[in-house]
Amino acid sequence: MRTPIEQTKMRAIDLRLPATLPGLALCITITAVAWVLANPLQVSHIGLGWMPLALVLAMLVSNSGFYKPAQFAPGVALSRGNILRWGIALFAIKLELGDIMQAGVAGIAVAGVMVFSTIALARFLGKRLGLPDELSLLIGTGSGICGAAAVAAADGVLRAESKNCATGVAVAVLFGTLGMFVMPLITQALAMQAIDAGLWIGLSVHELGHVIGASEMVGPAATNPALLEKMLRVAFLAPALMWLGKLRPTPRQGTAAKSSVLSQTPLFMWGFVLVAALKLMHVLPTPVVHVTSELCELLLAIGLCALGLNTRFSELRTVSVRAWGLAILLWGHLLLTGLLMVQVIKFGAALH
Image (tube, rainbow, N blue to C red; front, side, top):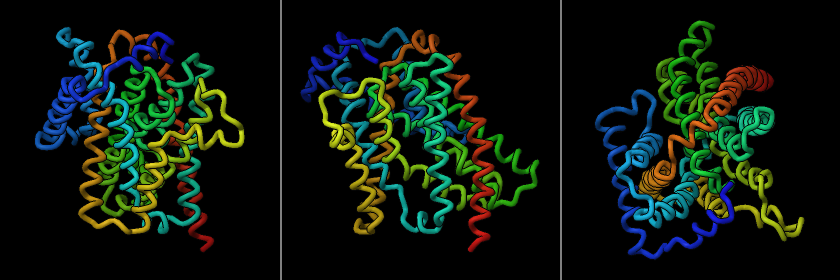
């Protein structure tokens, strides 16, 4: 966690509009470059979507020797703070009530098992590996829910160091990419039916883009079940972050036990719940949903860019070996538990 001196410096940063313009403009520029690389230039086809790519490019800029942190600090702080949190709140626009209802009780339950077991296991194993609690929780959240977006959301609760956020995103990108290419091969070797393969992919692959890529490699019949279970994992983002508020290494003091859950839940998470409710009640026009979804990704990408600009490669090296070890163990958990949960879903369907 940040030292008291660092926290004082952060509070002292001038967030008035003129002061924030250079840093904000830099984050937007890097994000635009990432979008061009990921979409028109098709870099996203190798598993590196434009949100993680924005972070990678920002890290390269931050470590280039030309970057002057003091000049851009106010805008970078705004991007990592409010802009990123607004993006997380809007992320709920991607939820679909029809998908949730289609999954049934078993489908919803197993998604919850994957999310909470992964985060709990990450914390348990992280302690034994000697990792900081916040880093373990970031890696666990990114692995269990939706990769880089989940890491960014968890950072909104944990207020982690930038190097730990960058590590969490790097883990999600690497193992999500591996999963995208490896999972179709494994399902083929096991001669799995396309629907079962899709469920397994949706339950165990990190990023949404990776889930889409892997399921399309398996076949059209795998895509819908894969996306269904993946979005159910995303639906557990709000309760998972509320739980992280309780697990936070340095919780706020002075709040009564009776109101601790409400007081420790960040405001942006209530925004997430509100947006989810509006979306699931179908009160938002389709154009609004589409624009909000695009805006959500833009804000998340700008926020991740800010994380990258606060990251130094020298800092990442101090935790990388143990973090990769934790990530490997969690990936194994996702694969094995996810395969078991597919059988649970099939058993639940057979009962009906």
